[in-house]
Image 1 (cartoon, helix red, strand yellow):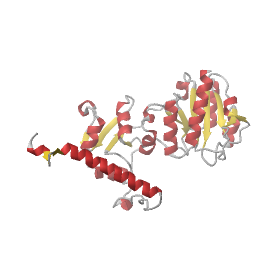
Image 2 (spheres, rainbow, N blue to C red):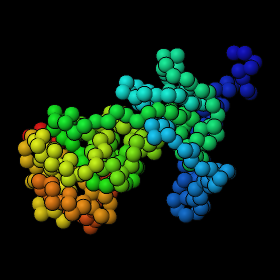
Image 3 (cartoon, rainbow, N blue to C red):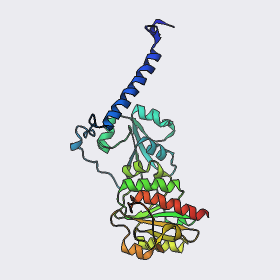
Image 4 (cartoon, one colour):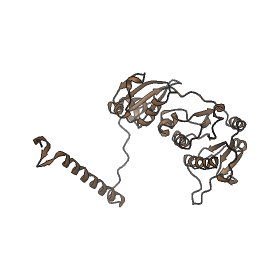
Length: 296
């Protein structure tokens, strides 16, 4: 073994492994002391310097910025996407593991703060940002072959809608349908929360929800509105070979017109002390129950 690879007769690799082992022990000891209240828990990191002066750039109607490794990779793989430009750090480009020459769009190597200037200092962009165009508009008629749909009645939080999209993809729903007003448009926040699901399921925004539910009825869907005061449990309400689950916003729930238009209202029976769930959690449970019905 060469002199450069020795330190007191032991290899530097052995020393590195030993250092890592002791670092893990120190970290575990520190975490245990925090749990016992012997040392304080660190405060959340303060907003980065200059963040109070940041203002979002003015975007054109057809301009969308997506960010985050998983989100951008999924968008680049989506053949229906019309991408404009990729901006990434050298490290992020390596982690994306893509052939930049085959993308057919400009690729700019930038520093993290260059992306911060566009997205803001709080965006967790992981060193990558994709300028793109919104996905093509889908029509309800195109969904007649799908047995399961998810309809949102003015769910406004893009984080919730993104999480719902992930569940919808996991349970192979045909689309997530929502209203144009009081619902998030396609954006970086929505796409990041969906973690790639935005590229895998149609996100259809309609003008009038009652009219859209009527169109779904004509296409053979049995629509069920989830309501904590619903007259029957969800699992006993399903009917037919096509199901559209309708969920309302947190707090307000389903609007009165929506309640009057769906085929049935149902509740999620919860035996515990808490009788309501976050809308994204409720969506996942309802999708699972719907899948059990459709498989029966």
